[in-house]
Image (cartoon, rainbow, N blue to C red; front, side, top):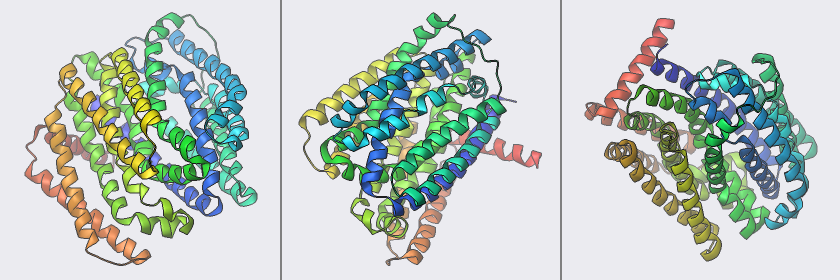
Length: 483
């Protein structure tokens, strides 16, 4: 199977699985929002942020090392797996002992017990099958998708059953543990691999992974800085409302962009191995993704209060205005994620780590020492900072591998125009309640799709858009032949 077909097939499969997962996740979130309080969500947000920070520390770039390595053997896989296990076990112990200090620092001493229990994610996930490394490298996502589907159903069942019984945040904590336990067990059932331990390729992997680890840590702290800052400045109660709106607005980035980026890292690496330019390939991928996630921003701008009032309840209305603001980060996240994947495939991990270090230092300096405003002002300044640092990254990539900046800006402007017109048309209908939301949603998305198709027809000779149309045609023809 050609690279284009493998990428398209893997991407489609992941998106379908993620849509199913997110469908269950949204139902779970709606139920939990009715049963639990903003403080419950705040405690879970703090525990989750800390545990997955330590999980990021434990990864050490092992998956990226396996994906980008030109020649791979069993010792590479076993060494990567062994490093991951040892790292996770050490960091699990470290998190247990540091939990009281971290909870006090974040102005949430009530989160200490939750942090310690959720820390079990580290040893549980450590022993997942190493065969999954190879499946991701080879763009074979059938088994991975099956595991994710079952894991999500188990997590949903456990979380909701316990939420009705306990009526506390512990339901979410135990749901996460159930999900990771299920994922680890299923990985050995569906992707068995001989259990061996080795550190024979430690030196080879560390030369790549140390910079990759540093980049991952800096990137994660930068991504979770909002949770840390809001918790420290405003407390767990305000953090709960902020984190719920953040989770809702980040759905496209978390459930579409992040998993799909792993597929395209493998494709970028293969393109690089062939000696081809990856700049246009990155913009082509971004065109497809931005077409999907851009309308979310406009939609939340129009319907944020209706959505919160109908689906979450009146107790969350005070935070509803944050939805459209926070959703803007999906644009910066999408572009920066795929540009950075291009840099990784190009072998620029060290330079990327330096970039993360400098931008994170600037972020911490500006906000930790000089900001004292409200949550609304904090979000506005964070958006401005995100676009500024993204601009720097794009300019660097233009010089590094000739990223077509003007094509990217052109496509973004067209999508923004379609989004703006759709917002205008949907706001013409006034009203409230579920009927207003349904009719307004139909008007909005129908308008957006129609305008995008019109613009695509006008600019179909644009080089990037021609590639997008050709890729879509190949995918459709492949599906028709199978049927």
